[in-house]
Image (tube, rainbow, N blue to C red; front, side, top):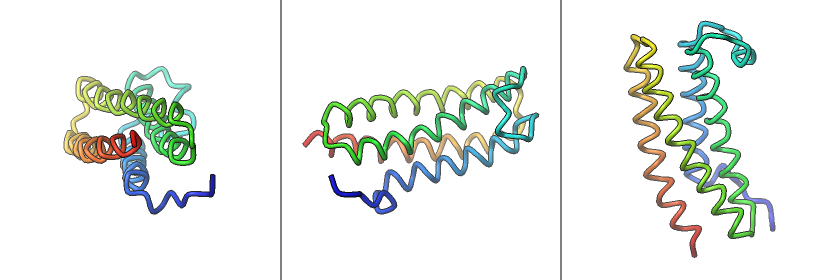
Length: 130
């Protein structure tokens, strides 16, 4: 399959926006400011923030894998995985709120981005069926 320019695919660009926002929120909310070492933390907040970051990265990777694959099975597996990740990110937002994050406007911004992404995702997933 010829190389696809992912930057021209709207859902891929939106996934990068979601990643950027997640990265900024993680940097702001985490107790451990070294984001590469969040996984070593015993803090529940840091663990949730690390999961948020990891899942945000996985979304763009899965979109790239689906877009570059000719296999319908691979494309559908990536789409299903992305759906799970979207639900996880919403759960992390709820978890962070319950952990006492006072800056709810940041979490609301992330939830709003996820909502926009989900709408785009549904259109993208339907387009893969043909």
